[in-house]
Length: 190
Image (cartoon, rainbow, N blue to C red; front, side, top):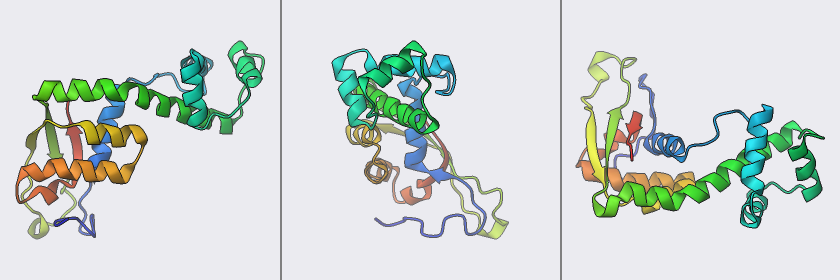
């Protein structure tokens, strides 16, 4: 695709890839458990979420939580505590299962029966760039009507597909869409 940045930040500009900002916003909409997994309450909440049904258990196993039912029971009852490695696995499995569970709901909510959702794109930070090298990049707003590919890539955790899906949407900004590959923030609410 044209306008892809090869040497971003060479002259002092700061920002993140647009798809990363979109993923952060979708994570915020997913409503994860706020208490960290290292706290007893956070661990219990995640374990209950991952073991509340046979479907949830199967999804947790598919997401990488491959401990025995006996070990899970011991963790739930507080007789044993998971190792740091298992805490990371629990957190990863929880986030993966949560994303899969809310993806269909988010697509419907963001598509709004074809009306779409307004997205605000805040340009990259050029305060570290010398004056002659700065370019004019303004705040932009865009109405995204098709969220299917974006949310599916986010739920799968596939950064490349998410980047491609996001780039396909920002092409609607016109001939200078490449200036919004890196941003400080992408905001939308649903």
